[in-house]
Image (tube, rainbow, N blue to C red; front, side, top):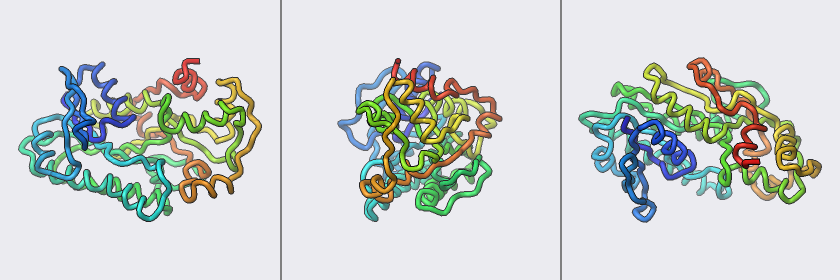
Length: 302
């Protein structure tokens, strides 16, 4: 299969590329900047795209099999000022709008689009959510609703669209895991805020494998939650990290302190979501990492 990954230089994009190569697929990775493009190989080609030109994108994707749209700046970097919120949303909507137009222009459009989203769609709370649950009413939920709607029109072209709502991705040296590990490495690990907030997580290898699983399953379409079927409270997760790293678990981090430092963005760590991958399990996907102990041991090679 010939697959284009928009945003393929990020953590998830790199993991998908590695897994896809192992399965014999051919990948085209799109990058905004020339200096970020590296050498090509028999299975991987890196091309520049400005994230805006539909005509240029059409030349790249016409005749290929699938597009995975991961475009978007990291929502966990930088305080959520009004300006930053606009930048975060536009970094997703602009490439998505160009993609829809490019697909419309294609003579042989890719048959499948995988559109990234996040479990922020469901809002925060303790109630268990699955793909049938309604969107929340907070900032992140509204953000995800707009993000998903940005490529909805491709379904009118007969293109199969899969929306992946991803949880907390655990990856060594990147993303959330190093931030979670830091207090324990400094011997001051403990619950954050109440410690009762639920984290819905997924190992990076399951994230990539699940995406390829859905891509290769012709009948799969619509919304799929990409989270392990074993969400854990912040307190439970902290105890796992302490046990795996053989560090103490004792120093609570007050909620007011995080709100003071992070502002509105503190909701990412203080407010939880219990999200289950109901449709992914029903489709037959088998998780490699259901257990957080196993996932952390694997990532840290302890």
